Image 1 (cartoon, one colour):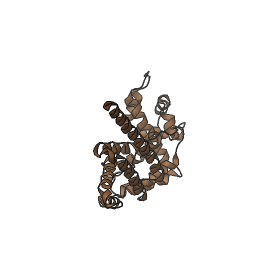
Image 2 (tube, helix red, strand yellow; image 1 turned 90 degrees about the vertical axis):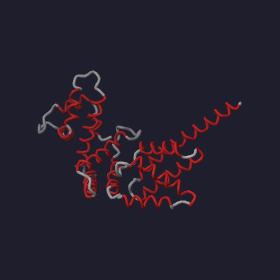
Image 3 (cartoon, rainbow, N blue to C red; image 1 turned 30 degrees about the vertical axis):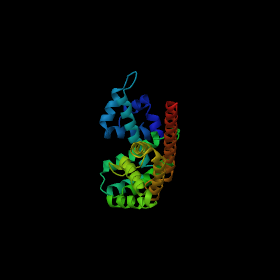
Image 4 (cartoon, rainbow, N blue to C red; image 1 turned 120 degrees about the vertical axis):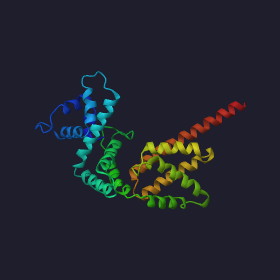
Length: 263
């Protein structure tokens, strides 16, 4: 996670910074960013300040603290020499396609939040390369129109044998409904888990392994369209492999239980 988030998800450290005044000469860059985020999100600031002196902060205070820390980190990233230009390009592309400035900022913050908490990686390590890849993908995601999406679905469905087209189309539609029902955005493990659950409920048990393989193929197809980066694809495939293995174990357990019942 970004060092600023690691620093300020500690409530006492965040409170110490928030109690300072904007413009103080003693503010460091991270503190200034946190205060700027607090000004932009007064509700979050109020929730965090209410936790002052509490033996155990409420879940609401903890969530709002993450909001402030994430938004503050996004401000720092926007002026980073490597990541800053990517933020600028992503926001420009999103706004050029009709997104509001606040909606573009939300997607940037979402990318920062995912890098910090989205995977079981070492939280003390800031994976700037992964975040850079996500920011780059936002430029391509911004340009995904319904017409382009329809073309992709048709191309993917026709990319297999005639007998597989219905399954390929279904798998693609299930994943995109899970991930893009509110508009194109980076596909996360949560989106993939939701798609896997839907497929497990809607395809025949004998077809689930093929559906999971098709899901992996569709991730590869989306990577070719530059809306899923190579690092994200690798991480999502690891999630898919793990989920498929759990499904196979569950099927084996059910089969064994059936054999026991027969005896």
